[in-house]
Structures are given as C-alpha cells and as structure tokens.
Image (cartoon, rainbow, N blue to C red):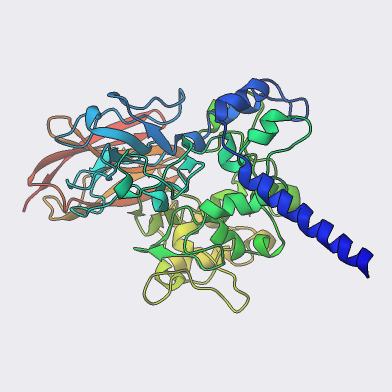
Length: 480
C-alpha cells in the first residue's frame, strides 16, 4: 500500500515538475533559431529558415519605422502609401499586407478606423472602410494570431492602463508554432520545443485558423464564408472525419500564396488530391480535360478582402477546404442558413459548395441548371457534346458595357477563343487606377462581369481587359 502511494506521489511530482518546466520556458526569438536552422536540413533537404521567411506567417504583423514594410521579393506588391491624411510616422505596425489586405495600427495602440479609406485591398488595389468611426484597440484578442508569444499581460504601446497585452515578436515566427524555445536552445539535442506531433500539425494551426471555436460550424457573412476558418471547414468535410491534419497536405515551411518564390523543386503541397484519388479525372468528349481537382473542389467561396459577382457566378479571394460540391441546381443562397451567419450542414455534419461558386465563376454566362446536368456523376459519365452547344469565339473581344450611360451598375462582356489568364480593371478618364474587377483563369467562351459604381461620382471611366497577350480599353459613362 505504501509502495503504491509512493509511486502515485512520484508520478504527481513528476507531472508538476513537467508543468513547471513548460511554464518556465521563455521565448528567445527567431534569431536564436537561425543559429542552427539557417542551413539545409538533412531530413527535409532544404533550408527551413530560408524557405519559411518567404511564407505569409512572418508578415501577419509588420513593424513600421517611418517607411513601408519590406516583403520578400516577388510576393506582395507591398503597401506603398498610408491612409489619407496620415504618414508612416503615425503608425507602429501594418497588419498583413501579404496577399490580401493591409490595416494600420497607430502608435497609441488603436487600429486606424477614422477614415472611410482605412483598409487597403490588394486584389482591387483600392481603399475601403474598416470599423469606420469606431474606437478599436489592437489588443491580444487581435494579435493572438498575428504575433509570437502573445500574452494579455502588460501593454505593448507602453501605457499600462490600456492593458493591450504584449508579445515576443511581431508576426508568426518559429516559436509562434513550435512554442517557447529557451530550454531547447540551452540543450538542443536533449530538449525538443514543446509543441510537436498532432499538437503542431493540427491543434496549433487550428487555434488560429478558425472562427467561433474549433468545430464544424462554418461562420459566414455577406454571402461568403468568412476567412481564416479552414479548421471549421475541414471538420465539416470527410477529410476532417478521417482525421486529416493540416500537415497531411501542407508543408508550412514553404510559401503557398506565392509558390514561385519557393526554391526550385519545392512545393507547399506535399500530398495532392490525385495521390488518394487517382481515377477521378474528367473526360471531355472522350479525352481528359486539362483541369485540376482543386479548380472545382476548392472553389474560392471564402472572402478575406474581396468577393465579387462574375456573370452568373460568384467568387471570393480564398479557396475553401470543404471540398464537397452540391451538384443540385441551386444557387449560393441555399448554401447558407436563413440569417446568412453560417454554412448549412447535413445530417452527418458535412457542408457543400454550390455550383455558382464551383462552376459558374468560369462558365459565367451559364446557369446552375446547366451546370447541374454536367456536374452530376461527372467522374463517371464525363462530359459529352458540350463543345457543340455553342460556337466558341474565333478571337478575343471586349464589348461595350450595357447599359451605357449607367447608374449605379453595368455589365461588361468579353469573349475568349481559348483558356486565358484574364484581368479586368477600371480607371478614371485621366488614367488613375480605380479597381480590379477580375483576375482569374477562364475557359474559352463568352463571359460577363457586373460593375457596381455605387462609391464613384458621375463621369467617364475606362475599363481595360487583358487576356494573355490581348489588351483592349473602352469608355463608359456613369450618370447620377
């Protein structure tokens, strides 16, 4: 009996020591990690730090010292100007700026919200409001997923009464995922960083890549899935029910948003759909159609900064991780609950994306009824006769918008004789860039985009289509 009690006490004491050791660990900074990890890893075959520093994680929060942040070459176009009436000296940080949008944090600890031009969207290269006129502090509730070593203690702006919290480093650096590294640095071969295994490949990722908690409930707003909810989506997919983790498909050390900046031969996607689904190609009139699984099954149904209507289709700026497609002839309104606050789930807790996200963002002039006839059993039956349903354009063309003059919206149509990388941009009559309506890879055929000019004043504007090597510009008139 005494021996049993002694064993229990030893176990309790050991557990307490382990907890105390974990709590005692401190953040040492990524410069300490570079000492060993800025070299080619023998197991991975690449330099972990060299690749990781080109990903988006380190640039979730960027210090500002009187000048714009500096991002890796060939990635984000960068934020070259501040909101109206401000200078770089007014700000301590830029939130983001790597791929989707940028927001600005004042030195007094407040996020800039005092002008209708407060958030910069990269896809449209335009300014939009962010909590316009509200008082919004940049505290741990915000930066817990933007920084390394976030804590509610103290106040990063130097004003203790603000109680904003503090952090070890801006951006998600090495210890942001692997945990505080003081004991590992003191004993590199004997002590590993505290986060490892499933804790690193799922729990740590999901702690930030969720909204409303880590569950299969997928928050939505304005007809799109909200951004950074990938864990919610995964848990509402069959992959989540199969216990997939983020690391099943991703290597977080390699750039994903800008794959061309990774060193030659490296890719952030380590497992593709074809690895597990080798016989799921789409046949078009008996021949394989050159299309990737993710083109349809990871449709951009999520919105970080920009969402838009493209003809009869819709697209956000982030790919979904739901994967399942609803092949019924229903529009995206049916995808969301009545209040639009979340994605509908079936009896098994699974979600699905509608065809106007999956198909009509490319087949912009078609309908969900048309798409449904081909989408059902598409991997079994293939597509037969689709080329004969319409005559493909023989050349590129850009039509005059209709109506013209217009107020406040108009439709712009264009034709593609072949699959093309398409950009459609709006300019003032003096050549000032207004915004980007479209940037996508589209199939051959006729397409249309709705342009809403509610935020613009009366006048003549230009719209420019670029498709592969083709460029055309036309005028349109907005009359209030």
